[in-house]
Length: 338
Image 1 (cartoon, rainbow, N blue to C red):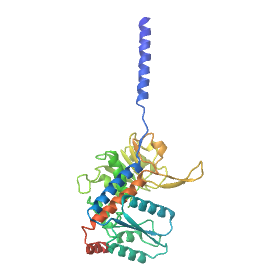
Image 2: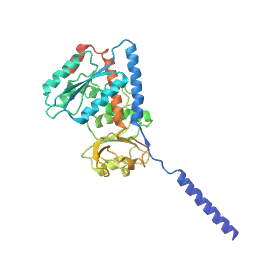
Image 3: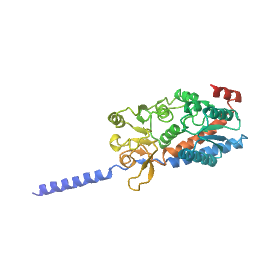
Image 4: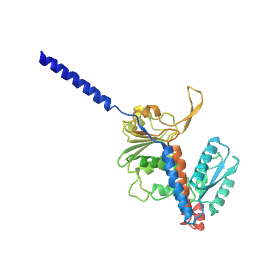
């Protein structure tokens, strides 16, 4: 009888220890990556770079921004960019044009800015009015001043793993992943969204060879788009180590679609109506509250990729200023005309 009582106590003790073990290893929420904090770090680097450049006797980098129309979001974005430029010591000018400007007039203005040696970086804020061909405008900007990284020459160099002006948002995503220490070599990545300015460049940066001139992430990348069935997307995301959501669809990525510990980078910016307050608010493409319970890393919206985009634009402007030493004016004109 005594032996039975001893055995019973041992079992109870054992169950208590198992219970304690389960409690101690219960999963914590994902690490929320602060894009604002990383962006401050990058802007500090940019500020030091600018001051070093100026102290060496060079002219202060200058960014010209072309803003067409009265889209409130575009005006807000441009204001954020010019404020960031002032913060790191880059001079700026914003050239406002009415939405009825013709494509020919806009192109003529771009060509003038291309040939102006005082202008280091040139940015045309997108979107443009419907009557203007955005691709023609992006290709009109000199590749050496193209701080958006949208010129076909810069896109081509990126795809060939060569040093170039990288698009600011994809570069920001890359820096988030690298500076956070999220491994990419041999990992499975899903990029939801195939836009030429965001989804495609992100996929290029993550899958290309890490040994090349412009090092890539050496990951295995799957790109999904509007015609990818949701169930098929789920099959890919459930085995992904990294998910980059850049489709512009609120709550596209939910907790049941990811594996435990995955890194989730939310590039989406969607304005939705809050069901409680009735006011509009910004959300990403990821169900943040649900996914953070399961992911290893996650970026918020706002405060994630957005600040990084602006920070990388500053880096590109400094790069553009230094490119002037490498490209004589006649070569800039030839590149712009190509």
